[in-house]
Length: 282
Image 1 (spheres, one colour):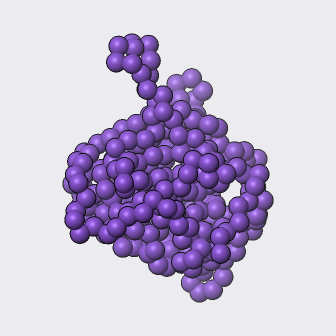
Image 2 (tube, rainbow, N blue to C red; image 1 turned 120 degrees about the horizontal axis):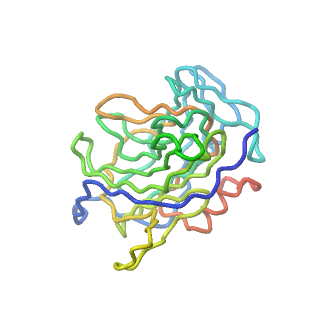
Image 3 (tube, helix red, strand yellow; image 1 turned 180 degrees about the vertical axis):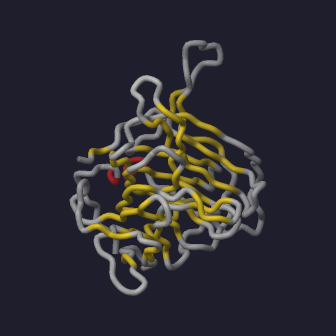
């Protein structure tokens, strides 16, 4: 039986952050969110096998290496989800409507069947490294309960290079993701140069006074580098590392949305409500 993922605390890790003013030639940015993609994974057909995009981009997700669409629906009102084997299975959008160097929001439901290693839910980039990644980071075995521990992370890179400056934000270690559906939302605000991660509709913003020795900060948002525009379609269930495909996701993904712009916290909370299926805007 699968259940919805538990609400998590948050931690933040920022590495190699080099903040600079956007280049004068950068494209004009708007924070008004425009829904451009939505994959419900209710069906798959054709050759190669693909699942339709209900968004304005109509960029079908092409299934590869044994990935499949299951007609069942254990969580959301609408049937269907993407099933990935964690070894070679993935899906890839047929077009690249997302510009990662502008404000954007990625949201998805994820259900891991083997959270004992690093895995990627969504990413963009087919060169040396992913410009954007929404991922699970394995931290080891829980010393109390014995289950796998880890954290959900959102990360961006400022160039397609192994030495790219990166920003990573994460929710505090969690041990309840095995066979649990979790809603994830990655938000990059280009105007504010900020990256935020929501888990089950929540971002965390627990700060501490400088002299508070008994307080641990939990913050899932941080100043961010500007991601490079990868010019590639969205990847489902894998990431690009040093020019290779890595971090194949083991489990299921569902109801993936792409917005160009910053989605409001209220809207993210709506998408994280598994009892309600949101309509796709025309």
